[in-house]
Length: 137
Image (spheres, rainbow, N blue to C red):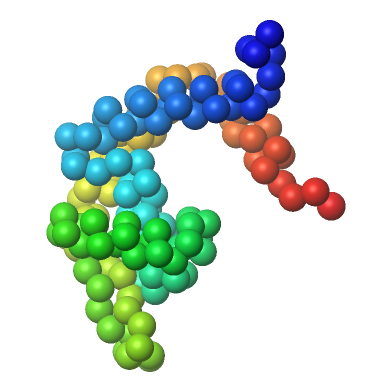
C-alpha cells in the first residue's frame, strides 16, 4: 500500500540516491552537500560569492552555510577572502584542490546518476520533479 504513495517513493528514492552518491564521493573526502557547495561556488566561473549568496542558491540558512564553509575550509577546498567592495563580508573562493575535487566529484556524481536510469528516464523524472517543485499559482 505504501509503495503507491508519492511521498514514500520520493523519500526512499532520495535515500537510495544519497547512499550511492555518498559511497562514490567518500574517497574524495566530501559528501553530496559539500559537492553542492563547491558546485555553486564554481557555477559559470562567475565572480566569487559571499556566503549569504551561496546560501540563497542552495536554499539553506546562513548558519548552515557557515558550517559547510568552515568544514570545506578545514579540508583546504575553499578559502574566505575579504570582499574588496565591502570589507564587512567575505567572499568564498575554491582553492586549486577544491576545483580538482569539484571536477572529480561532479564526474562521479554524474556517472552514478547515469547508472540509475536511462537518459530518457532521467530527463522524464527530472521534468516531473521540477513540476512538483514549482510553487502553486
